[in-house]
Structures are given as structure tokens and as C-alpha cells.
Length: 252
Ligand code: ADP
Ligand code: MG
Image (tube, rainbow, N blue to C red; front, side):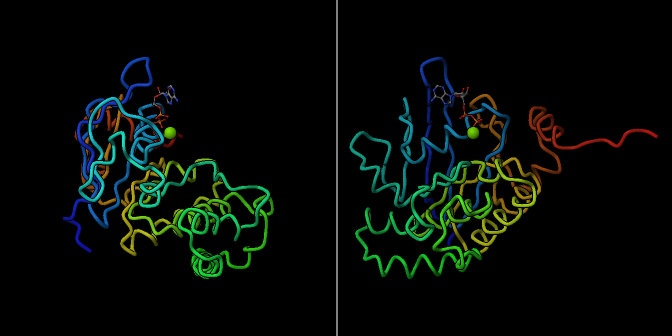
């Protein structure tokens, strides 16, 4: 693993939905094997940023470069790029009428034209890794939220993406299920996966991140190593944001 190798480069990205800028001149690099955690207040543009990275949103100007190739131009085949940039959303988006296994093998068989037997073998290995092999013939409605989210992660992983984007994947889960999903992401990080993670789980962010990016009002306000960012954030805005996660004990 070479953490100096740039995998994804964002250059001067501007995004506007038509009523003012949402992302202003954002530039950053994601290196191979690196975990970048994106945090910031609601509405600051985190989801928009992730969605721009894999072409779910058009951008007004700037460049997105993957493996040295500009992918933000008009000619990009996003179906190909999305095999390299996997994404997991807050709302699992599993097909309810398909079993866990069928949900997972759909991408590799339809998009990558792999044989079902081959894809199923991989799917089972990945399901085992996230502790869900025994659920492969169940339907999403028979699973807990945490289990559905782990299936959604497997469904992205089976495409063998070069980079994974996670958009608040534990935000809709009951507290006792958050951990099992975060643990899967921690394991991926330890295994050298390149990831961009949007999360409000600050302790997790501190543990998993190589770099923390604090976004506010469409700007990168701060970018730093987690130990520096969480111990002494430089900007007042970041300090204020981090304070919203701590409580002071009432005086007795
Ligand atoms: P975050 O994920 O940080 O909460 P978002 O990226 O969802 O923020 O939203 C950033 C800003 O863009 C917000 O002001 C939001 O209202 C606006 N926005 C998001 N999606 C759309 C859309 N499809 N059309 C218009 N405005 C949008
Ligand atoms: Mg969001």
C-alpha cells in the first residue's frame, strides 16, 4: 500500500443547485489506502460532495480525477466509474423482492457480466466476513437495520471498487446496531481500503480517519490529522461544531 499515491483528486470543484453555491472551490486528494472522514453541520454539502464524486450530481466547474484520468468531463461513462467508486447510503436501498444473495450478485452479473456461480462464491465470502452468511436466502424485511446496512456494504464491495464512499450509513440505525456497522468499516480500513466517510460518530471518526475534513458552508474550513483536529481544532467554527457533541454534567 502506498499512501502517497493519489487515487482521487478533486480540483476547484464548484456545485450549485441553482440557488447559490453549495460547494465553493473544493480541492483535496484521497490517497490509496487512506481514510478521509468528512464532517460538518447538516446542510453544509457533505452528501452533495460525495454524490459529485461518483457522478450522481453534475458540477458547474472544477475537475474530478480518478487514477490520473479526468472523470468529470461530459464523455465519462459513469456506469464504468461507479464500479471503481462504490457508494453506501443511509437508506440501504436493497431491492425488497430479492433475497440478500440476489441483491448482492445483481451488480456483478448484470454490470460486470460475471457468472452467477462465480459472483455467488464471492458474495458468500463477503457475507461471512460481515457475519451474515446465514442470512443469504432471507429477504431484506427479515433483517435488522444493521444487518441490512452490512448487506448494502457487501453489495458495494463485491464490485471490487478502488474507493468506497459512505454517506452517514449509521444515521438511521438504533444505537445498538451502529457498532456492528462501524466495525465492518474499521475492518475495511485496517485492510487498506480507500474510503471517504461522512459520519456524525465522532469517536469512530477519530479512530478510523487518516485525515479529517471539516466542511462548513460549502468550504473546507479545516483539514488535519484526527488527533490534531479533535484535540485542538484551529477554527472557531470547528470548535463550535465539536462542542455540540459534548455535554457538561449539571451541578449538584
Ligand atoms: P449535508 O449532507 O451536509 O447535510 P447536502 O449536501 O445534503 O448537505 O445539502 C447541501 C445544500 O444543498 C443544502 O442547502 C441543501 O438544501 C441543498 N441541496 C441538496 N440537494 C439538493 C437538490 N437536489 N436540489 C436543490 N438543493 C439541494
Ligand atoms: Mg447528507
